[in-house]
Length: 109
Image (cartoon, rainbow, N blue to C red; front, side):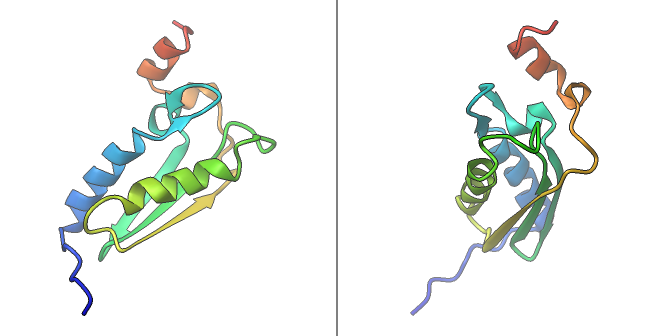
């Protein structure tokens, strides 16, 4: 017998997903992916979360592990039945996409 999944409204799941992604850090920079501006889009529909993200450079050595970390983090949220992550290169990431908190953490202000 399969245990039923918790069903939450999509907007609540989206809020939880954004909060969870703030716990996923770029291991080289030590700043979370949301504040780095690497998460471009997050959509939730019927317990399925789709993320569109980028990396700081196409040659990023973490290109395999960071999308996997995002997917794993999303799947820990009660009510998320499926998570998919797509890495995109447009628009190209630039440091101006970082939050003020990220620039402070990196000592840029």
